[in-house]
Image (cartoon, rainbow, N blue to C red; front, side):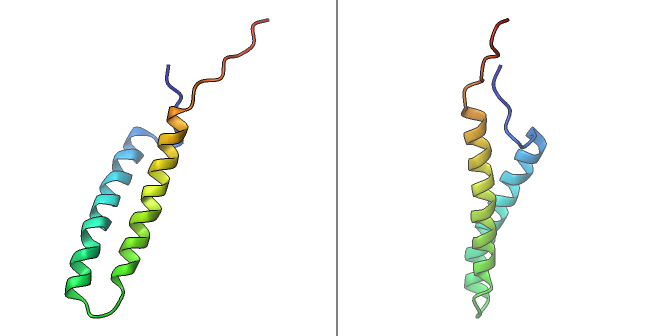
Length: 69
């Protein structure tokens, strides 16, 4: 059995959707808006990507076997 990460499957899907939306919104906002508010979308995308990567790292850890008594 694989070790579970700290995100459920549903939360993982939502995180991926949020990442993709923020990643596609940033260049569109940069093109349409004169100020640098598009940087917020970049920061959000990086934050969500970090959470997804941390969950992946936790899921890939080997399970710790309980000592036999």
